[in-house]
Image (cartoon, rainbow, N blue to C red; front, side, top):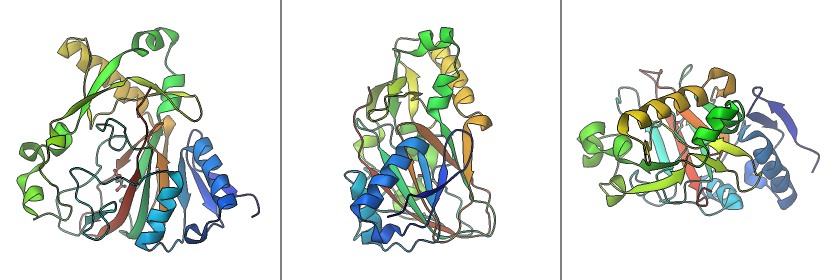
Length: 281
Ligand code: SIN
């Protein structure tokens, strides 16, 4: 296979890869994609045609596809979440900054999102590099946050009292199951080291991080607010305008993302698979 054609999307992360058919990937092709994944953290492939088994097979190249404990997967493909927002639907998915499933004991390594029906404009996804965010902290702030631990949980994102009961009654486009996972809490380091590249990154996000261990509530809130604002600076971001057939894969160990909900009156249909990660260190 010739070397990949890589077109960076921004100064710090993201690249569009041309000339690859993900449904027909051989081992050499995957090795190149894996290298690009570690280098760029977000990879975009256009004009793909992925049946559900193809998307799962691509995910399995990276590791074990997960079944989400709260957002219900498709009946015959429990590892695939249909990210479906038809015109008129109010409930949305992924519309604040997060890394996928940071409330798991082993948060997701990667997410693979395949765009099928997209609005003519809007519905873009943003990512930021949490490693650039770490690299650009002052030495003094690095000393303060490195070594701290934070509590993550799904209650803010999925509590039926907050998110609306309709999702749990099967009346929304994406449905959820009431599960103990909503109230479970897990502790992760505020700064994690990427297990494959050795780079450090900030690992707290406004969707799933609940508080910093050992700080008063107002201290924790103030520090988290600062870290969220710093991590999501536009300079650390890239942006994807989806088209039907676009596939994005991202590394949740060193990025956060945000789905922009600005396409009222249009349908948006994507299929998402996440891959099991390791315990952050
Ligand atoms: C997600 O948060 O995984 C979904 C992102 C998107 O729909 O753009």
